[in-house]
Length: 354
Image (cartoon, rainbow, N blue to C red; front, top):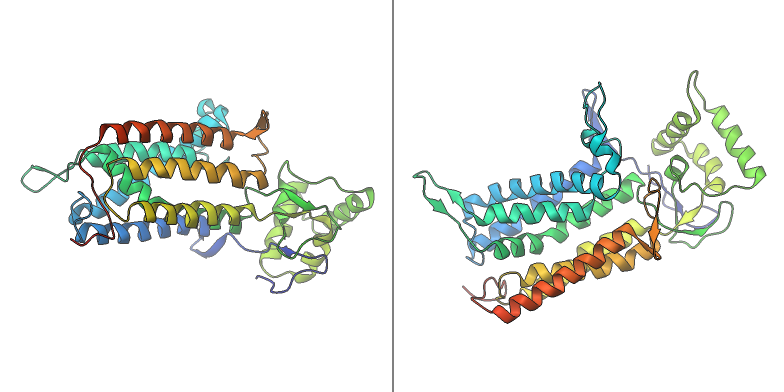
């Protein structure tokens, strides 16, 4: 249940449930739905582009393209998280299912930069074309053109993904008001902070209040972490009194997930749609995606905290995500210069008449 009014301390206390509903013990989560929504919208836009012959991908293969991109995002995103943020998962093996640390989705998540690498590989595969019923290759195109198409559609998925991050109460923003302090109306208090290494420092009195709250909600055999998880779950299911007790013990933060949804989804999308309103050399749209996304990611991470599991959270004042974005910008600029110098046939252009 989502409260409409801000708390007396200012701001809003997060009480959104990451689970939409459960069927036969299977939880349908907003995070999974966000991926499906991004792919569905991207697929519909791709079909429209195919129908107008604005891209070299055959209309009848648009769903195949969507599936290949989905695999690239999921595999690249997960491997990217392991490589960039928690390499120990790569050599972690256990006797219980799913056996390999990379497959333990309860440990860490996905990395957007890894997803982009996966998408680049997916674009290369798409550019090789598809076999028709006669065994002939159809839809072969320049790899950079395939990557342009994917980059053009990517902001939809990024937007929905960041909204899911907000609903899940993950990837927390920086603190604007400590526990018990009055906060601006737009600030958000995330109960999930109590489960992370970004837990704010409490006064002695606040620590005692939290301890009493934990003890009052403890079930036999539960440790503190499990009790806090239960408290959060009860708040998400409408325990208003419990939420009121917890509010003064939570820090108010920047809703950085929403900042990134706006920047990576809406702003990047508008930039790319403006650029590709007329035909461009293959690769130009993809390069502008790398440049624009990188600049906005560096900017929005000024209000976002690094992952709490990192031993070194900042290098020369920048987070790991910001450094990856710096590299992405450099690659985008260099590749754009090469493409413009080389020239060639221009493709696309949604505002052109065909």
